[in-house]
Image (tube, rainbow, N blue to C red):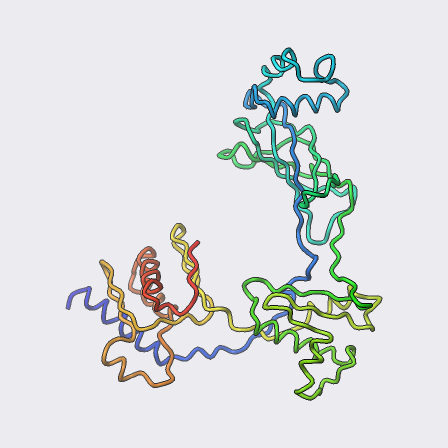
Length: 374
């Protein structure tokens, strides 16, 4: 028997065994905060333009935008360019000689909990022009919010630029270089029709109509007394009760009415709600492969349909032979992908070939799960 035929037989036997295996994993519990967040508690990005000076000849000389930024900086510092403060030919010729300045974009991330005036944050500097920001100093930058219609200056930035990656010298950071000039609050509830409502936002990897409905029912069950809803409400009235106090808007968003008992303590209610234990639903069947790093991640119960895959070094046969048809019962599951991958690795099949086999199974329409290629 050749090595190839031995490999073929081993994989077939494994997959046949997998046909008899049933994945009845025990239901696990997790805290609600592990799979969702409160709407309003998101990070916000401030953006602006700035001027980095002090570069060792690695700036941008003769660039119109950079010269305007230099002229504006000099004007703000009480030394306008030229006699009239206008960029005339004489002034432009002088500014063209400057090689130690570069125009940059400046961004700072406000945490989900917000930021207060006087608080300092890190900021990221990225050159629009120039060759390197190494040794540069950000003179100033006024940062505005993500809404382009809002002209409020929320923060001012300045400081020495630290280039963290020598291979990318046009990007750097300034530790605590951004000082807040305005308070940024992130409210976690809204008032509507005389009541306070908060919204749970499920993480994209956990969002589903089934999960949203289960969470809604669990909240009504646990807080039925506070909602003035009995825990033993008749089945025909349960949907109405849920909609009055807890409503799954879609697969991602769940609106929850803050009970009257917590009207003056919404933070306490939010805390208790996020600490609630719920049944963790089965993960969506998906396969994430990264050909560059040669990694395969399988989540959920990913199955394989009837398929034969042939590569240069290996033959995979799943559920197509006569003996499989005899072994399979009417309610038996298809072979599991994780068992197949494990057997391929046991047989020293290369990572590249494992990924190729998975992609071929998916192309044939026999991968019963979502394939994500990073």
